[in-house]
Image (cartoon, rainbow, N blue to C red; front, side):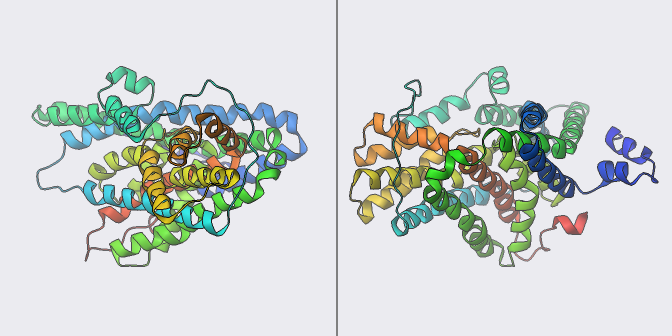
Length: 424
């Protein structure tokens, strides 16, 4: 099937450097330009920048719209057309997801003990309904798995979408080859649509940055500098130290080229979309460019957007311990370890949308006998600092999906993982 985007790119006059940069240039460089211009417009023309936020909303909306359909057709096609000799690597990837999330919670506990934070508790709205127990979180995940397929697509319920996609793929394995070919062509067509949407990322991020700088600024976060420093510091440490160590133990080669590729290609867009679900198309495109097996990443990427939540584990742990410190509650080592386990399990149930981890904080606070009213005030603090906290959390979560998928797919003794700069 010919790609319309490639046809348009070929038609761009070579003598026009601006058009050549827009249509053929590195999308990473274009995103950097969008970042800089968005910041400048947000500072110099805040009213215009707020209006430009529509560009960011349209970009994020387009990603959210195409992602559920992409997951459904890609997973179904991959399973339906899978040859019996092909192998997938879902199990080691799932293990990396769990190890990474638990390690993040442990790092957050240690950091909170070394640099304890306190917060000013403020009242919040009573309309929020956090889960009451870990069992309730797991129950919600199981209920999501048997959702109506139309409802799952409409509400971006990726657990339900995955279940239906796997079921359809298995059912189609015995279908006629022409039927399988149609499903394969459909997945290719949706992938092309994703390419068109991603090509608009620089424009969308330009609008997002302009609106954020114009509307939010930094005034709201001045009182929480220490708390933000602990939160973001933990996430940066995990991204640059913990995750590379986990990947090295798996692949036994220098992990940093792969780590930096994932951060550059995935974390940047996730930082501004603030949604792991919206970043699924970006991650799938990166996984394809890394030369990973489609049968593997078409399942592991959307699954990671649901259960691979190292950033969420950090947020839940740090904010809970900040509340504990504020109330003067003493925490012993066994309780801190239990908090790490609860935060890890809870993080796996966090929604892959902006602020999805915050409503799980009351669950962790209940370990220390903190009332729901006080815990919901901690959630309110989370929303105050959410501009930076949630953006960094999503960037860590989403980029780690690709990182662990690549590491889990690697077989000892095989060729090195193909990196972006080698296939550009």
